[in-house]
Every structure is written in structure tokens, then in C-alpha cells.
Image (tube, rainbow, N blue to C red; front, top):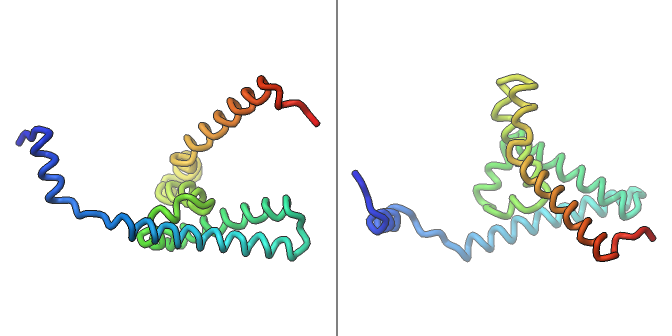
Amino acid sequence: MKLDQRKYQQLLARKCPRSPLWKDCLKAFLFGGTICTVGEGVSNFWQFRGLDTADAAAATAITMVFFGALLTCLHWYEKLAKHAGAGTIVPITGFANAIVSPAMEFKSEGLVLGLGAKLFVIAGPVLVYGIAASVVYGLILYAMGGGGAA
């Protein structure tokens, strides 16, 4: 059966349920905000334990990545994401989930070809383009004369 573009769009409109956009946005905002609030609580905890602001920020990032990876390993992050939608993607815990999920899926193939090879399947391009963008930004800043040491 061959469909032209118009017929395909009509079939698609009939078969796909409409997404409750405002409800989805509100849930993403609330869940994402809750994750960020937990991050602020973790930061306050590390500062209360005596770390300065910069060290507390690093410890908070490490702690939140650990929480995201742990929730992914326990298969709770997926359940949370079904309700939270995009609210679980943006925070640092979403980054941990993006790294751990493929690794867990392919762990049966061994440490090197499974876990090691698949660990950065999703996060790898993000890291590569993030690093490349920061280098380009740094070069532009340097060329504009703002890259000098203080």
C-alpha cells in the first residue's frame, strides 16, 4: 500500500493521540525543579560539612551524577521519566541516565565490548560537541582580546 504525503498525514492524525502540551510542560517544570531543588539541598549539605562554594559545587555534581546512575540501575529513573517527561532530561541526573542506560543494556556482552563500548553511545556526541564548542568559544574570546591571564 503506497500512501502519498496527504493521506499519510490524515492517517497519522487519526492514529496519534493528542499530547496535553500544557500538562506535560507543567509536569516537566515541577519534576525538573524538584530535581534541581534536591541539588541545592545537596550543595547546602556539602557547604554545611565545611566545603567552600567551588568544592561544594564539584561535590554536588558528583553526588547528583551518582544519584542519577543509582536510580537508573534500580530502574526507577525510567519510571520517573514516564511521569516527568523532559523534566528528567535537563538536570545533571539526566546526563547520568544517558550514560548508564546503554551500558546496562549491553552489559551482557562483557566489560569491553558491552559496557565499555556502549557507555558513551548517547553522551559521547554531547561531550564531543560540548568540548568543540568550548574550544571555538575560547578561540573567539582570545581573538577578541578577552583571553589574557589576570
